[in-house]
Image (cartoon, rainbow, N blue to C red; front, side):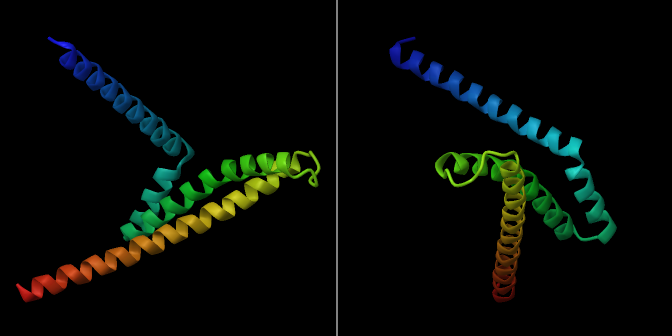
Length: 133
């Protein structure tokens, strides 16, 4: 085995390690969502309404809000460091969390709107091709 083969082996091992790390991270996120009841409540809502789109919308909303809360709080704390006009109280994190939750919900609804429009467009194109053929 020459130098190029050794380099290819090292690159392959690194890529496999990165893939395993990403997979473990995704599993941790999925376990956290299951622990918080996000996945089970979305599935239950889908079964209750008998519409998978409702379950997806609920999952997007819950994930958007859960991701927006810490993002908003951190953004508020970082913003406080740049703007000296805001006092250094713990309420900054609360206001940031509320703003982040609102932004996460808006982003989730926007993603849901985009997915619905794309689904309708693709469905229309497939039906049109099926009618022609």
